[in-house]
Image (cartoon, rainbow, N blue to C red):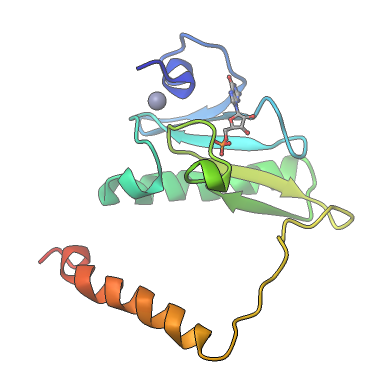
Length: 144
Ligand code: 5GP
Ligand code: ZN
């Protein structure tokens, strides 16, 4: 399967690489939301956040923290977003897992979509639904 990010990892496609180690590669997004917008990509191909093996997550997050600090400092950003889009509905366009590091400035736009209100009883209903799935899978989470 042809994957743009695998090609970048394998140096078959060009990218402005900022940092790499044996686990990840970080490079500039070609269509930045703000200048310095960076992608942190595991060298191994996983489709999305849910399919990254748990043991690989710490390395990716650690690298993302390090690179986010460097990006923020270099563009003198006031803040930054670390996000991952998962699925078409969430805006994912490249199905090789990645974190976005997006530098943010005080005068920037807001990312917050329109906020919804829970109707009577709905907060508890949603919480119950999620808690029941969590309780069903918590032994898997705990490695039992
Ligand atoms: P997603 O929409 O999947 O969360 O993010 C994919 C990101 O990859 C987009 O922000 C897009 O601009 C970036 N992108 C897509 N193709 C390339 C490419 O060939 N090179 C680089 N550097 N970034 C890319
Ligand atoms: Zn890939």
